Amino acid sequence: MSEQTKNDRGAWLQGPAAECLIPERQANPWRLVLLGAPGVGKGTQADLLHQRLGACHLSTGDVFRAATRNDCNPSPAMKAALEYMSRGALVPDSTVWEMVRERRGCFRCHGGFVLDGFPRTIAQAESLKQLLEEEQLPLHAVVNYELPLAEIVERLSGRRTCEQCKAVFHVTRQPSKSGDSCDRCGGRLFQREDDRPESITVRMEAYRNSTAPLIQFYQGLNLLMPVVAEGSPEKIFARTLKSLQERRNGNALRAS
Ligand code: AMP
Image (cartoon, rainbow, N blue to C red; front, side):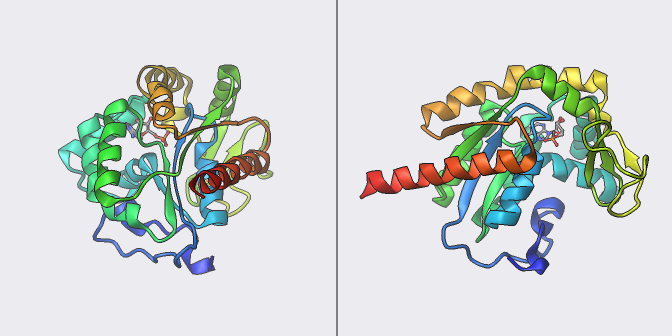
């Protein structure tokens, strides 16, 4: 993949009117959903899957965060969504779905896609299923990242993000050499509002109630692919890739 197309998500982050530098056509594009509790490392894995496999990283959380920065005059629905988000609560399905449906062209991306943070409820999963059927774009797998709860809370509460380049650090596991500023660009490091302890509790509750049932939903569709999310991002990525390849080879064998 060329430098120019790296991490380009114009149409996804700003809406369909924005120009996207479409990645070159991939021979076998992947269409994936990533599941797992907040803090399990889905965003990092989505970014690696984008860099190594060329699939477009589609995160609904990133769209809301981009709106916080760019949208000087947010719509009432977006204002309400940002308020839910800052508390760590799930944004209502209707708002999320309106946003995703508006960007449905991103599902036809030549590079394929990796959905990160969506779907988060059964209603969202049902809507996505219908949309992909209409577009004739079947999913290849739903990767479920698994990690014990205590480990997740430790990861989230220590996470610090660069205000400018969005690089992610951890106060003990991956501290920035320069303390409060980013090693890459010098930007200020901050704690995401939803990584504060009171929001983490709400996010975990929302995950247990709304998102965990998706595991059964996708198991029923024979798409679920569990991956242990322990170890370094590279180790987790290697595990993911191995399982994806085994899955694709198995499907090809069954089809022959
Ligand atoms: P994330 O970056 O995926 O952890 O998302 C950050 C926050 O954005 C979540 O805690 C929710 O408040 C909101 N959000 C993102 N995606 C969704 C979704 N699919 N459904 C409901 N709320 C969402």
